[in-house]
Image (cartoon, helix red, strand yellow):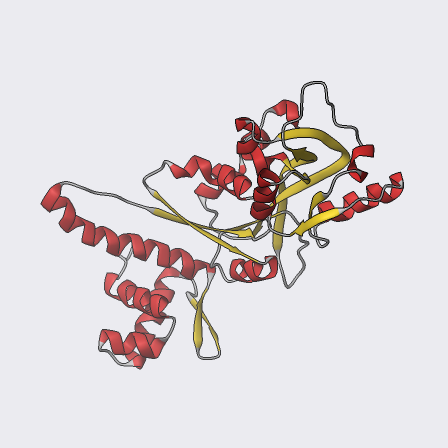
Amino acid sequence: MPRLNYHHLHHFWAVAKEGNLTRAAAHLHVSQSALSTQIRTLEEQLGQALFTREGRALQLTEAGRIALNYAETIFTTGQELLTLLRNGQHRERHVLRIGGVATLSRNFQENFVKPLLLRPDVELVLQSGHLDELLTRLSVHNLDLVLSNRRVHGDADHPWRCRRIARQPVSLVGKPRKIGNAFRFPEELAERPLLLPGRDSDIRAAFDLLCEQLGLHYQVLAEVDDMAMLRLLARDSESIALLPTVVVQDELRGGLLEEYCVVPHLHENFYAITVKRRFASPLLQTLLKRPETDVLGVAQSNLS
């Protein structure tokens, strides 16, 4: 079996890092034609296309992204060889890139990646943005996974693989109440201002429908798209907040907030979105196989 030409791999690595053949050729002090020939030779040896061209820009294919990860490891290892011989230290790292929808609970995202946080061989790249933006990054293999609270449906042009990884009831929470002063649902919702998710939220739409069915009119103190901000307002105001308890799990455990009641028939779903790939990441498989209770960081008794 022929051995890998590391000179060609190094030139591929340089082009992939630059994203531009002209700049990479100038940096390497070689001609563009020679650089193109070396990359084609590497592609023939690997049996995979490593780049696609979009205008003047080069985009990595799935195989290209994998090759880049290996190249990063190979050339970093070469540098680490010097460090190892000098002071005996060595470290190999694997990179996992995860996108999270901006409105998604930060606690949920932390719970999801927690098994990897103590692994010295793993580097996490966590990005936040709008769902459409993150899906674009996923489609060109700049992300390995997108976490969302909205389901997406794949088609021929967008081969998303969307799986629900957790589901939690939505609750009403607020400052701790006096013993014996139980929350009256739904009557008390009309008596105090509410902190609610924004109107584009599935939770908000379902809550409004429930209130309409109950003939309930409520007063809004604030509509908040960002769950991190909703968490802060729930903690620092005297209002009632509508949210999944995973958002305020630390405040509930610390006694700063109290779960007044679980809203009937109201849930938030959490999804992991990927694209079909020939080379699945074992790190992702580790995360996606976890039970729902671990992902949510709550007791099973709180789930339905």
